[in-house]
Image (cartoon, rainbow, N blue to C red):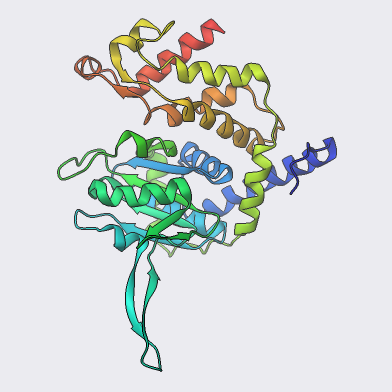
Length: 336
């Protein structure tokens, strides 16, 4: 697909295609997933934008089922890696083994690990040591792995959807800020409302889950990535995203006092890029060919909650990261 500006007819065709695809995706996901509409939307925004996603939630909230179902809809190769304290980098990336051919000649052959798939579910990613986390970091950032000095490109599209359990912190290795920043969103999965929970219980105890039908291919996903980046955004909307990210940094000129009191480390440039790119995806998914400030506001929490580090004072006062983001939004909106 060319990098030229789309004509009005092309824009209208693309918006219609994405919007129709959204309805098809939701219809297929409803076969296995009940509720969680915000979570599904944020996960789709990551896939349409080409970003990685960190999923935080208690056990038993269908995190694995959701990721597997999405990979089936897009007809993508799916691999689940259970992260444990004894997991080594080679267990993820692969390793070289000595093989002998029919002529008796021996040579080292690289055997690919589970990272060589389109969708990687990194289950309980914070249970593995930093050395193994670093191996995943290269794959997330460079879409390649290095083994014995050789680089191996990963198949495209490539997504890492990682889960972490917020209630069991024994024996965990908190992700470093550099790796957290590589995740486009931090999506929070909460318990379902009583009626939805009842539907899940009735459905899962009475019959087998329906089969999900593929809708798109990997090539379609790559085309969506190109389309998303071509969505126009007004300068004032992009400036709002930049201002929002910058306002989260303590001890800077113009930073609100509550940020100086409650935040140790604010969001970097990648947060503003994520807000803009996610806003473009959200606009298309909602049938619009341009980004609005409301798109940026809607993505503030999943974009910033893993990029802003709270201080001990905030924790002592019972202030949560979502509380800080909500107040930050109100302050920045008032100043626009």
